[in-house]
Every structure is written in C-alpha cells, then in structure tokens.
Image 1: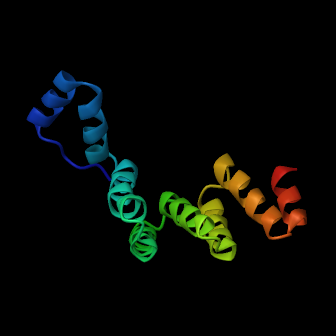
Image 2: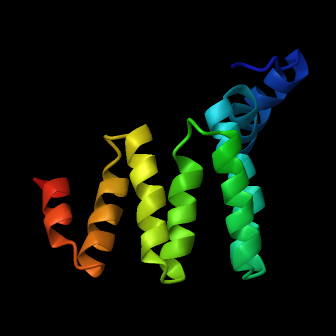
Length: 128
C-alpha cells in the first residue's frame, strides 16, 4: 500500500540526496517502513539498553502486526540465538523460511542452528 507524500517532501527528497531518500522511501513503501519501525523498537531495546525482554516483545509485536514480512522473525531469531535459546531461534527462522524460501541468509542461519543442535541431517537438506 502506497502512502501519499506531499509535493514539498518529494522536492526535499531531490534536494537533500541520500539521507532524505532513505527517509522518504520508508514513507512510500510499507516493507521499508516496517524495517524502520523494527529497528527503532527492537534494536534500541536490545542493543542500547541490553534489555532482552523488551527487545523480544517489540519484535514479537512487529511480527504479529506485519505477519507477511520475514524481517521481524529474523531479528527475533538473532536475539534468541545470542541468548543461547536455539530452539526458539529455529522456530522463528522456520517461519521466516516459509515466508521467503529463497532467503539464503535464513538458510545459512538455520543450518548453523541445526548443526549446533546436533541435527546435521536437517542442515544437509538445506544446502543440497
């Protein structure tokens, strides 16, 4: 769904270059807007404050609200992976894989988790 952008914003976009382009693209496209919101909510909760629960809740909320996007699921998986909760990370990555089967990063990340969880046979099927 496209959002309408006033003319002066488009003009600002042309005048100020890349920084404005990144901002206004996020206004125009839902997928990029989702990413911008995700990073504001989850990334700062986890990285800046080192608050695991708030980060998980933020990404979980985004995953529920934007259920067609695999980005929140990948971020949740990364949080769980860093905390050593490999089963939770695997669950979120499998869901992300359903949404975007061609995402190589998800496949690589899943293979890593399968190997660490002693499920090498599943990892083999991902790469073969």
